[in-house]
Each structure stands twice: as C-alpha cells, then as structure tokens.
Image (cartoon, rainbow, N blue to C red):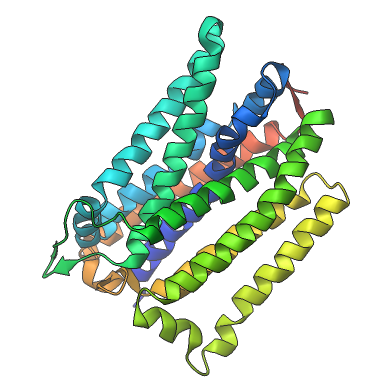
Length: 332
C-alpha cells in the first residue's frame, strides 16, 4: 500500500520549497529597496517582480492549508506555539502588499510607501526565520497539546535564524535583479550579491553548528558513524555551489548566480530535512502520529492532484511571458 502520509509530507515540503524559490527573491528586493536610488532604479526593481509577486504566496497558502488538512495534530500544536511570529509574518505580508499597490497610485507619499514596502518585507522575512528557528529548537508538548508559554519561541537561536533568512532572501533579491536588469542597477545588484553570498555562507555555518547543540537526535543524524559519510556531502556540496556562484558572478552571468543561490537554499532545506525527518514537530511528533485519517488523505489528494499542476502551469506561463529584461516602464 502507498504511504499517503509520506506523500502528503512531500507535497507540503514541495510547497515550502516553491514558496522559498518564488517569494524569497521578491521579499529580498523589498529588504534591499532602500539601497536603490529613488526614482527609476526603485521603479525598475518593483517592475521586475510586478507580474509574479502576487501568485508566489499561493504556495504559502498551500503549505499552511495542507498542514491543517493532512496533519491536524501538528497544526494544533504548532499554531499556538508560534502565534506571535506567524501573526507578524501575515501582517508584514499585508503591509508590503498594500505598499506595493499604493506607491504607484499615491505618488505624493511614495517615500512612505517605499518604507512600508521595506518594513513589511523585512518583518515577514524575519518572522519566517524565527518560526523556523523556534521549530528546530523544540516545542513543549504534553500528550497531544502545546504545553509551553507565549514567549517560548523567543530565543537567541530563533533570532539568529531570523537574521539569517534576511541575509538569504536579500541574496536572492540581488541575484534576481542581476538577472532581470541592466546597466548601473545590474552592477549594483551584482555587488550586493557578492557581499551577501559571503554573509550567507557564514550564517549557514553558525546556524548549522548551533543546531547541533539543540537536540541529541540532531547530532546523531549528522555525526554518527557511518551516516556521517552521507551527511558530510551536504557541507561539501555547499562549498562547491558557493564556488560556482562566485565563478558565475565573476564572469558577469545573468541567470547563473540566481540558480546557484537557489542551490544554496535547496541544500539548506535538505539539511533541515535530514535533521528533523520523520518528525513534523521536531523530536516530538512524527508525521504518522500527526496524520489525518486515510480516507481524508485520499479525498484531499484528489484535489491536490488537480490543483497543483494547474498552479504550476499558470506560474510557469507567467514567468515565461515575462522572461526578458525589465526597465523603469516595464518589461521589454
């Protein structure tokens, strides 16, 4: 019999990956926004994401809704544990969405809308990183319910992961602009990408070492023999991808730096999977313990099998239509 629980874990994992890939760079552009010159440069940066940014958050909805439907116990534990950062994330996304629209329609206050766009992007990104850190450090569970307090999510480690994601998304944003823009803005973005790549590599190292101190099971996954022969390939691959990233930057490539930056994110997510599998609440609740009944999973899988390909199709079409370079008045 096919293990539907594993299939649903893969679907939610895919939704998370898709969200990071497709929304990370536009949040990153918001983080970098104050560094660009007001006027044409900011308009160009905004135009580069205008056709796609709204649909990118579809994957966030799929991930959250899928968690509720496929793993209701995990949802019931995680949500009360992480109310504060999750609410902050949603408010940040709302603020940046409003700012995105109103900066064009209210030019008299464009400076304030630009600041709101940056603030919303930074808050949403930091809150996502804090949420990840709070999950990794562990959630207090008694029986089938959250047993911690309101501030359990707040720790030096969760603040570190929040700051780390700010760096990571900013790197994706810089690489996207290096791909989609021309002239001075492209050169500026490439310069930021070079500096942010070094910062991200340092953050990955610090977070990885700190993660090993959180749970004994994390150390067992990464450092026990002979498993270390496999897990050691992840940091090795990270160094190789970083070298390829800087090689593509030095050769002034357009697309390749963005692809290699995404590769660094994929390796980080692979490392996350190695650390927590098969838990949906790390070291507390496995995916099978949290899973919905078999018939419910079957019912939802039918819908997912129809809708996910449709979402992928219209997303791919949007990116294909707007595949060229962009200027302050839109795509060429």
